[in-house]
Image (cartoon, rainbow, N blue to C red; front, side):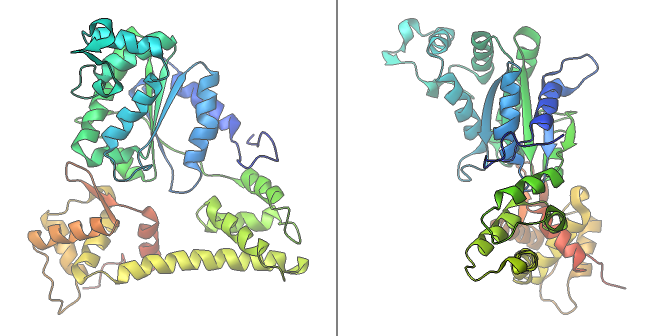
Length: 388
């Protein structure tokens, strides 16, 4: 059963789910592919990161693992490969004796190289100490399996360095699982199609790793949430809030923002709390959808056609195949000055990337940046192919 550890805490904990998942991650068996890595998919802003940091990491630690966490969206300007390496270096920095061993592994006598102290900058891809060496030494030092959690892991596929880092982690995983205490790589993301790119192709580092849909927050969260909203003129009814929460895509920030708005309505009466809360939640959902559609309607005819075809085809999208080109033309309005040539389509895709509507892997595979827009376009009929 899901429950919070303390009703007065400001974070809802899913301890039971975390313990179960932690055991599966660390499980070893000849019939299991968990050692290939585990991929967890969940829509954006549904509590995934909070779960990783507040529940899963402690559960893994309780089972004796050493946990390293890297958030590839913490700094959108940084290369994802650098972010992963920095997280590993951050853990290494906590172990003084380990740095001496790494210096020796790099052929540095007395902890110095050419008169310069050995530093963490010498650890990483193409450095004096490889990630494989560093993680193996860390595993031996800690005498524990390492779990590297990479949040929004699909971003690693957007750069050459990020992709190379994943392959380095694969090599480290193979080494540590055979000769040391073990390495597990837990990758999470907000888009299932993007995460799939890291594990469905034989030329990807984590081919064959299991991809699991992370369960959304349920009614127990709403029951806890309502106990937290104690300073309203009247309590919220979980059974009224629950369907509204589902309508908001199981996103805590929507219902949380609604409570904040009611909290600052100093004229709100107790008998009006329930109706007012519902109105505010529905207004927020409508405003978010309106903003997405405003961006969509600002696109050029060809950009709109390309985006709709991508949303329609999903993981089967091949931007320049003949059938795809014909679909672009089907969506283009008659009389449009835009033409669906390969050059124009490439320019449209680039513009859609700049508008953060489309995501591109370094090897040229495209996906929707936000699955919520795909759903909205489908619901509003924009993915219906024109008749004729």
